[in-house]
Amino acid sequence: MIDFLVKRLASIAPTLLFVSMLIFGLQQLLPGDPAKILAGEDQDPAVIAHLREKLHLDEPLPVRYLLWMRGVLQGDLGESVRTQQPVLELLLQKLPVTVELALLAFAIALVIGIPLGIASAVGRGRWWDALANALALWGISTPNFWLGILMILLFSVQLGWLPASGYVSPFEDLGANLASMIMPAFVLGNALAAVLMRHTRSAMLQVLASDYVTTARSKGLAERVVVLRHALRNALTPIITLGALELGTLLSGAVLTEQVFTIPGFGKLIVDSVFNRDYAVVQGVVLVTATAYVTLSLLADLAYLAANPRLRTP
Image (tube, rainbow, N blue to C red):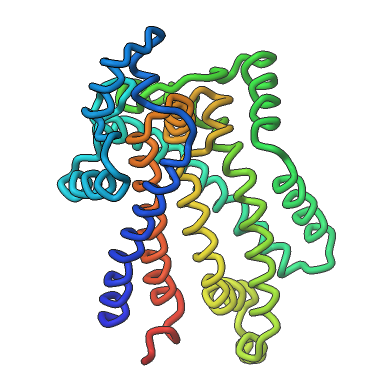
């Protein structure tokens, strides 16, 4: 297991290096000049020239990349050209919001998706199997922004139970925080729950048909023990993979959902930064997201070993 962990850790550095090159290179393809945007409506050539020099926009692309990477390795992701705020400081302000939203959505998805998938597989061909599949199809097919708007109309406008938009820090008012986050979290968790349900059902059906499950049943074990201890544990591998990737997607920022509910997270930040040609912020957000993906992938591999002892054998 130690050898496996060392190999996986050794693969992270070149992966992130390649991702950083890709991020920086593709970012330069965006139209527009940050110096001209910052110069304002007057477009004074002297001001533009000064800004280009200050932002190193007059340097060749490889030089700009090396300057950026040197800063990244020192914990300096640059400065927002719009707010003049350090990018790292800006990301640290937005990251807790997105992490909270992602974890709430992920928890909702796990609570709904995995039990429905298990019940659907165990009761294959019965009425609750058809109902679970119908709910999964509804969850996959429903656009997040449309569901979000409907929930605002119902729970905020008609019933007045929840705030329509905005964000309150949990350190200020935990109740108001949960009230503002429950609808966007459900919107995101609804779609993920549908995907988890389908994958859980598929994995469980395959495992339930295996020989060792038949042997466990022939020994007289209770069906609950067979399903939860023997079948589910061996069906977790594809579910863990999907869960890790989907959690990474949630951490990258749910753009439409955050826009609908005016949640000041990564999704809204990156949209605003792209429109304002704020290269440093876009690069910082994508780099943090890529790092989260790689880290979650490593954690998923470790979870494989914990869930399935057979993978620990050399």
